[in-house]
Structures are given as C-alpha cells and as structure tokens.
Length: 253
Image (cartoon, rainbow, N blue to C red; front, side, top):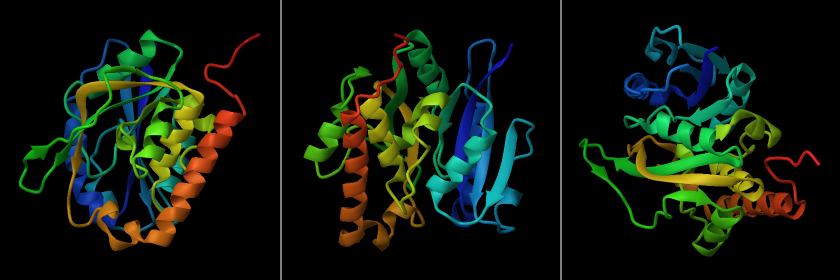
C-alpha cells in the first residue's frame, strides 16, 4: 500500500509566481519505495490570479477560501490531508534534494519523535544563498528546549518553523496553525515542542526566499504592539500545554 506525505502550501496572488520553483524542488525529491507526496495548494482568497500558476499534475490539489492569512489557509487545507505526515512548504520557498526523505527517516525511525525541522539557507534575489549561526546540534530536540531558547533570545527560535515536518494526528490534535496575523507557524512550533520531542537535521532542508513582497518584510510585521500581543499568546499557549502534562506519544496505560 502506498503511503503519503502531504505537502501544505498557503499562497496569495503576489507569491503565486514562485509556485513553479517550489514544484520543481518537489519533483526533485526522492522517497523510499512505497511512499509518495500529495501537494495541497490553498489560496488565501478567491482570486483568478493564482490558479494559472498551479502546475498540472495529478499529485496536486488546489483549493481556495476567504482571506484569513496563511495559518487559516493551511489549516483549511488539512481537511484534504490524506496522509500520515504533513510537510510545510511556503509558496516562495524551495526544498533542497533529499529534504523529504531525511525528515521521513527521522520520524519513521522513532515513534516518540513528533516533528522535525532542519537547517535553512536564505535564497537571495541574485540567486546566492546565505546561512546563519546558532543551529542546535543534529539530533533529537527535547520538549521545552525550543520554547526556552525562544523566550531567552528576543522571541527567535533556534529552529525554523518553515521547515516543519509533523505527524498529521499530532498536528490536528493541536488545532493546526494559530489564528494570528503572523507568527502562526512559530505558535505551532512552540506548541509542538511543549508536548512532543522533535528532531533537527543539520543538513539544509529549506531555501528560504528573500524578496520584497514577503510578509515578514512588511512594516506591519514588526509593529511593536501587535508583535508583543502575538508573542504573549504564543508563549501562553505553549506554557499552558506544558503545564497540563499532555504528552506525545500518549501513554496507553
């Protein structure tokens, strides 16, 4: 029986032109025998501007819905997620060769690992790449480690939420992405870290495109009042989950 990895991508009109690059990077992935990917592309809106950029491939499902931000688009797409694992891929980013197979291997090897992340390189407008220091050691990430680092380093995690690979049942149990105008992926990452051990791969797992239209580059993203509110609720959720002592995997006793 074929098993599936679900790729979830939120897209809006300005980023739609990058979908072909993301698709090419998916096609370059090699998976173990018996595995395949299914790409769920969900437009954050109902325009006529995204569909022309969606590749014609039976492994791709395209959906639309009212505007609510990337977290809402990804969570709505989960209704069509028919696989055991979910991989995030933003519309403007790319997966280096081998990224999917490495994530899959980490979680298949240890059923107590709930999620995986990996090293990121910025993809600059001229086509060059740039890394940055501070990655954790290759291997398991203990519960609470990302939250503690994030709280002590001006709300910047040492692993990148845009590289997330996660068990679908765990993702659904936590309600998907947070209902925030930004940092919804960080909120999910910290919630996952509160309840489950993770994995970090020191191999590059994402090319993170830097361009003038990306949401994190807009002035609203750094508005002090909104940022403080986002960080407060992200932390409160993660610490509440930790205090409730709910853990993945759930004990059968």
